[in-house]
Each structure stands twice: as structure tokens, then as C-alpha cells.
Image (tube, rainbow, N blue to C red; front, side, top):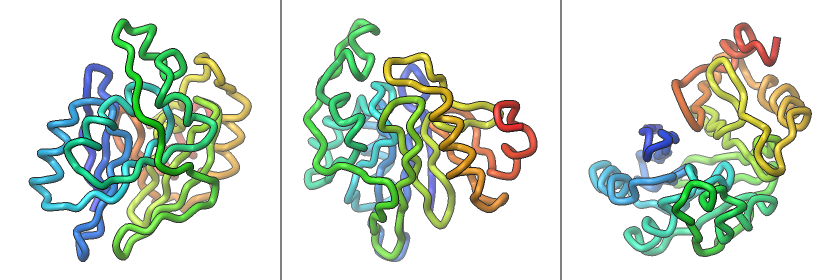
Length: 206
């Protein structure tokens, strides 16, 4: 099961990905509105094992510590190259928005190719730096969580510190566009798309 909802003033998509047999689940990119996310989890009667972060910008991490407090035992994972963004308001960009966000550090660090088990389901980590140095996507049986790497008709911006357009395009073309055309793409902002649609219509990939 995948469900997504836009959270916070910047409308970053937060996702629940669950094994419905075991009711075990992960939260991907809880950027804001921790209490709303918690109520959502309770409505679905899920047990959250992990909070997984596609990258460390504030609009994708802002509710992490609030959810740690509400959920109890939960492990937070982020790529090593973005790990300091959790604990540094300048690196996660919150300092420039007038409300510094400083969180606890990660419980574990994500690595390219790593597989994370959730009940009877798995998520594979795909490293796609470019929007930030530690950007990753998560591939599941039900779709690709693309964070701010790939959007419907667009790609992530690369003008933030540590961004790189050549890196981002390389990752998208070599690691994401090789997936089957019918793969759902669940981005960090905006509407769902598919790999096939992006191959055909994305101006950055044509």
C-alpha cells in the first residue's frame, strides 16, 4: 500500500508505504505536520518501523523529531552525504527561512543498493545525487519514490549548495530511466507520473 499527502507550507509529499499483511510500514519524507501524519498512521492501524529520507532539505525532514516522540521506537535513515543536514540549520536551509530546524542525528545511513525490509515488502535505495549530495530514491514493488530528483515533466533544482545538474541528469538517465515504463513515480512535490511518461515528455530527458 502506498498513500501520499502534501504537508506543510511548501507542500512536500509525505508517503506511507506499508505491508498490509503485517501492517508494518515506513514514512518517507515527513516534512511538516507531524501530528497529522501520526493521526494518518493511526487511522491506517500501521506500525512504523522506519522514517526514510530522500534528502536533507527542511521541507522533507521537518517533522522527524516530532514523529520520533509520537511513535516511540522508530529508526531514521538518510544518506551519509546529507546526514549533517539533520543537525545543521544552514545545511538543511531552514536558517534562511527564519525558523531554524535542528534535529537529532540519523539512526542509520543509507547506501546505494541497500535493501530495507518492511514486513513482506522491500525497498531498495538508489543513490541519485544532484539536487543535494546525498539524494536517494526508493524503489518498491509498487513504485519509485523519487524525492526531489524526478518530477512530472521536470527534475530537481540544482542551485542549492552541493547541487550538480550533470550529476542529477546522470543518475536519472542511468538509474531511473532503465526501469520499466509502467513504473509509478511518486515525487517529492506535485503529481504522480510514470517512467514511460517521463521518457516521452520530460524536456530535460528528451
